[in-house]
Length: 581
Image (tube, rainbow, N blue to C red):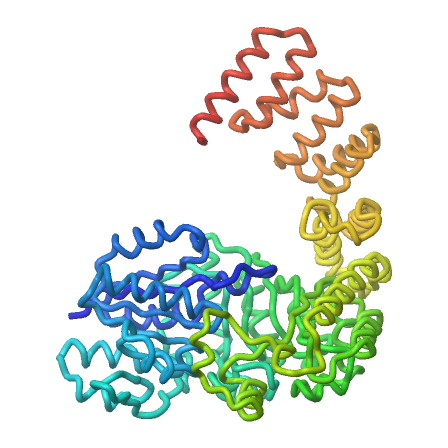
């Protein structure tokens, strides 16, 4: 029996600016693993992104396992590392079948099998039905039966055999819940997308018909992960809010079960309304990403993005009014891109005032309409992917978009956003609903933290980051006693040398959160800066298992002339540090 299954998610060929999505195994890998586990197989999922620059570690990880079959989850960006790891796997485990699956294998299955003999099989489309059936055929040694499995391709001599596309899973709730077997943060409650974006391969992979998990299944999954300690989730559906009432039912389920979580989602601007946003915020949604793509209606039309300026403005205004950070995805280097269309995107940003943005250069991948158009007008074949590259930039395929101009467009957009961000922040208007006040405080303090300690802290183009952060922390505390706001404001005041004011803010904070180590330590530091060592010392002694608190306690003892206690505190801090190390 093929008892031991190794599923590998290879790292991407190139390092990227925003890798939070690419570095995480796709949820489909966990669903496939759950199906195999439910059949009695042992599944090991290996993600090589954390060790991408250490081939010796990757080789050791593959060698340590004893698989009966190895499956690779192939996108396009990780195609070449996947091929290299397949060769490695064949060298270490020469008799073990290697199977490629995922969106990359779905659109390039013939290319892979024709050119790379380290690949034995390719699964085309969803794998939960085809892959287990392949394993059952291999266990029986029935190669002829493999040729009858929908969605499986393989070589037979020099001939490639393929019995047509695999069957989609129509009833998603019939799939075993992967949360029973694995830990993960990226969730999906549906499959499919009714959109026809020319740059996206998702509809061609999943289909235009959208299939849904029931709210109960989805909330059960969240609860299983929550009970094991997971508190933050990414909802990665292409069309999470396509059925708003279903999303509201999910949100009510999260609240009814007392799941104190935060989560981010990807939504369509067309679906957004106030009731939906209210329940999403109540249930812990802190960020929604919208695919805006461009401020130019003509470019959005060419990208197949059927949304209007009014819908975009409404979605961003309402999302941020309910205390949810609205992030905008933009694509540049598109058909017809020029200085005027870039200015149109900047103008749209001024209208919608996003608090986070991601800018991508338009690239081409198999399975998309833009790639099909490129093949038709250029005459290239899929053999172009024999080159060691992740993707093809659209501007490389046309004459009127020069690389240096595209790079300049990107700089213009990013710099324009950062220079405008302060104005966007100061213009935030929140709905006046008292039961959302704690959520408003959370929203404002989270945003403040990105400026004082997080993603925006090191970006020079954002002016007066400390002033913006202070504005947000104070506004948060006007709504509710927020732990993050007390701490952030206290630290900012300390950095400014306003130690007396910092002590006052932190005293109120420790009164609200008396067991908070961070607030007590920060308060103690303010008192030390005021020369009040005797008052600071008890705040540090509340945390005898904290290295940081003991080190500050030692400083207080030293300032108070208590040398033996100072030495004892330093010894205890050193002992704790050695245990941690």
